Image (cartoon, rainbow, N blue to C red; front, side):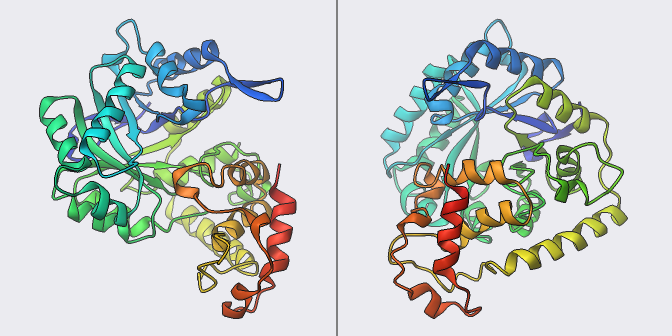
Length: 378
């Protein structure tokens, strides 16, 4: 496993991190059951392979992820790794923030969190709910001074540009961040450059389309024909080619996925400049094809019915252009259930036509929304 100094923290972290959101599971009576034994074995194997950064959150795996991770880290393993979890900022109360932290500490059976994230925040939330007198940010700084939080962090799903502003307003107190970055979405590139320049540790989620490494899509494998064994390889090599990214965080659900990704992180060199140029050229063509469905200009917004039309069409393009259909369907099913997807799915369209009146491309949005729901609903 390769390691890198995680920004101004000075800590040596593995380039591959284990995201504990997709731990091993099986279906029973129509419900998903998370397999504690296999999950613990997966975490132990990751440690054996040199992974030392583990990321979880209160809501992962039907709220069981933190408990499973805590059990996996018993027997002297806790001190050998860096543990990341998150605080869903439900209000502006510092007291409530601390209570949620205490709940995570209890579930994880640990006395401290290495990297404690404000979960999925926006710039507006940071200004009006977090960085206020006696609010979550001031409480986080107090808890850091006590050693309960080792490093203050945040995860980000807001508009490009806002991430850098959150860092500025953090006045040097924020040590690291987690954001989206992959072959399909490099909208956070400039913010990542800024964060790195400010000395923050940078971890990215979703090296292939939002968290699904290893999707066997021919479109992605064809980016470097004859040189790649899997989509995971091109995804990780693409991320590792960015010198301002420290950790590629992958939500792996099997030991086979883990071992493949660990081998890539350990042995595979970053993409050469020629390979990067080839990939960017082909991705621009794919983006052009995606633009035939929606350019993402957002002139259609806001939707009176609460749809996020550009995001819905992004998911459709994961299926239509990049052939990452399983991921697109799983993500579509999360709409309205996770903090950064609190909007309605395409079935909520009442065909009012307001969006089409504002669309500069004159796209048949109502028709495309119907197609999106029909294709992606599970």
